[in-house]
Image (cartoon, rainbow, N blue to C red; front, side):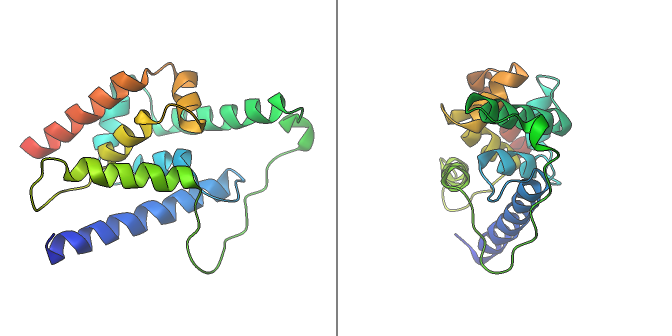
Length: 170
């Protein structure tokens, strides 16, 4: 990997992880997970993730709503009524090193691996690689969010691959 690609990757990582952390805080979650990373890629200037979701007429706002609903249903399943608990306060900003849930780390590492497959020495990590990687996860919040949205994970993977292909030809 060349120095330019390494710098580009670091910039993308910083933008993604910072935005994922902000999304988690805004939703009242202590630590960002794969679902927050999904929201972060939908905010990147690279629109390949948005194009993949647009295949299903799903927007970033739809994803955010589905995450909130999924969290509410999860709390309800253990006997906690989120409505009775009151509105969720955003988590205070943290100082120090970046922390994240294992789900975020796994999805990001898989996205990087997907971006490198068949790319020879160079690769370009796109937001659609993260969507593809997230859609591969069979269990967890992201898979429940996709079901909530009525999006088949395999179809989303295909749409992400097509968005990546469109990026490579343009």
